[in-house]
Length: 243
Ligand code: DC
Image 1 (cartoon, protein in one colour):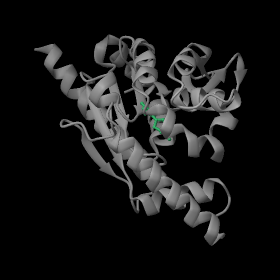
Image 2 (image 1 turned 180 degrees about the vertical axis):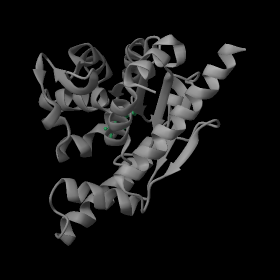
Image 3 (image 1 turned 135 degrees about the horizontal axis):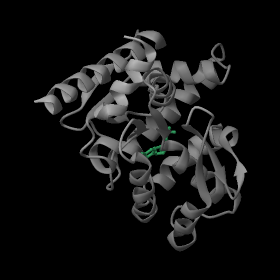
């Protein structure tokens, strides 16, 4: 099949809504973005919205319990598309803060902000609107359970805390530094606990999600699994519609 035919096939109506959930550093963003590129889908990293709000709140000295001051910050953050239509950048108060929001200060603070129900409620419609009529991979914690419960494909990316801490340490270029690495693992466990035990939209595996275990897999292998899963679902959808 030529590339043109392939895109005709997807434009014809098999472009799916795909939810990818999982804990921090499970690879949702990198794997999701690369899978989207290969499939010609849009990609959206919803964690950036929570990170940008947390960053703004810290900058302005607003704590998680100051709900009335916190919630309006949701209106000041915006996801920005790159030239491939991937929503992997975020602006806060009109400035690109993508690099800042991925730093350790936001890592430490963000879970305490993202458990505030009123803030989550303010961000729900914005995420739903981004899904549009499909052809999108949306990554987060509650995409398959709360934001897009009717998603065509739900993937839960699993990696052990140790594996995720190793990846984060490599990203931060502190892989050989034992103190830094064990600090990252400890932080990761603390955030996992807050994200999974919060009352509103906790991180959990949707009943109809496909769990993709990534420990010991290369990035390329995980991307291939995700792409294959989505293509299989596209084919099934295509078959259903043809009947
Ligand atoms: O995926 P991440 O590490 O960039 O997420 C940052 C924080 O945002 C994390 O505390 C979980 C929260 N989050 C969330 O609660 N719901 C989402 N859909 C995405 C992220």
